[in-house]
Length: 138
Image (cartoon, rainbow, N blue to C red; front, side):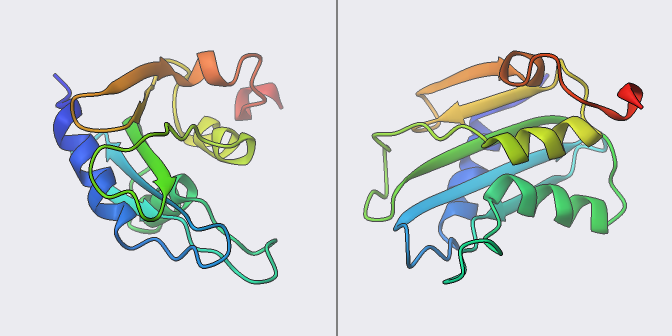
């Protein structure tokens, strides 16, 4: 059984490393591989904006670069950088991140968006990306 609190806590830790000097909106993600290993990611901004990378993709790319290709869940946290404990926002994966997740994850993978370890919502990737374009679409 998935430990939601642990995964959210890992996302909150990842958020601490956010590099967001332009948006001042810090995001952290924790992606659980099928192996049970958790991969953290944070958003990394660039002054040119286009090269900016979201926390979710950072976690996916880190995992894939270490050989993991199947995932069971991802937790995402995000809010203005000055918020440290219970966050006032939930941060959902953007469209690009949803598409990258669809490349490696089943549509029933759980996506946890959280304000804290106790305050969270759970969706499936399929709910967030209906009619997804996946490798099976080719």
